[in-house]
Amino acid sequence: SAVISQKPSRDICQRGTSLTIQCQVDSQVTMMFWYRQQPGQSLTLIATANQGSEATYESGFVIDKFPISRPNLTFSTLTVSNMSPEDSSIYLCSVLTKGYTFGSGTRLTVV
Amino acid sequence: RKEVEQDPGPFNVPEGATVAFNCTYSNSASQSFFWYRQDCRKEPKLLMSVYSSGNEDGRFTAQLNRASQYISLLIRDSKLSDSATYLCVVNINTNAGKSTFGDGTTLTVKP
Image (tube, rainbow over all chains, first blue to last red; front, side, top):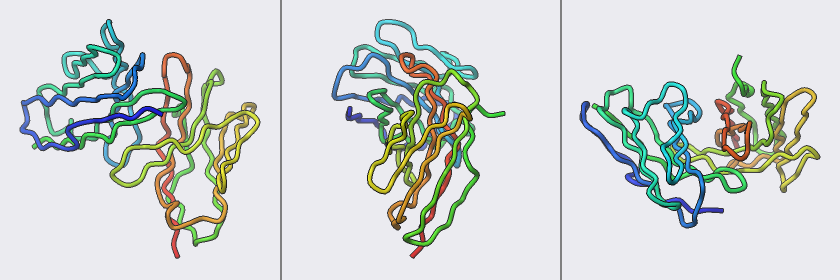
């Protein structure tokens, strides 16, 4: 299965600022996925990052708030923009290769 | 009704016990099914895929019942290290990577 390097692993940010999360995969993958996991809850898909085209966002998530880049088949970034305390969560990237493989997650706290 | 529903937890069992989790899904067009394990403050990791014929991996057995639209996970001879949250994942469209995660069932195995 793929190996994903995700960073940062955690951050504490001031409200109104932005944070960019990076994921590097050790192999080329067509789709990468970005999830959010609120404390005590399961994973919610934010968007699917496609190489060479705009990301596909799920209901409730918009590009202005969560811009995504996918410059090549092994890398993607998710930016959490204009953060508020409600954005405090764990953010995970994932690829689908015989089941999902996840990055180790970014634990974001907005103060 | 949620697309994917899991047994409410937590399950607290003694070492050596057999425990079973169920997960129901609402979309009859669902194509693939997985069980994931998530340890506290870690990312989810694939435990096993669930096949129509059922499959077994050591102490773990997964079953799929398409007619009743549920999957199950059976853990025999529970170990302390089995303590974790188990997530049911249902994939509507394998190619598009559209999956829905259950809220998870927490298992605690006690000595």
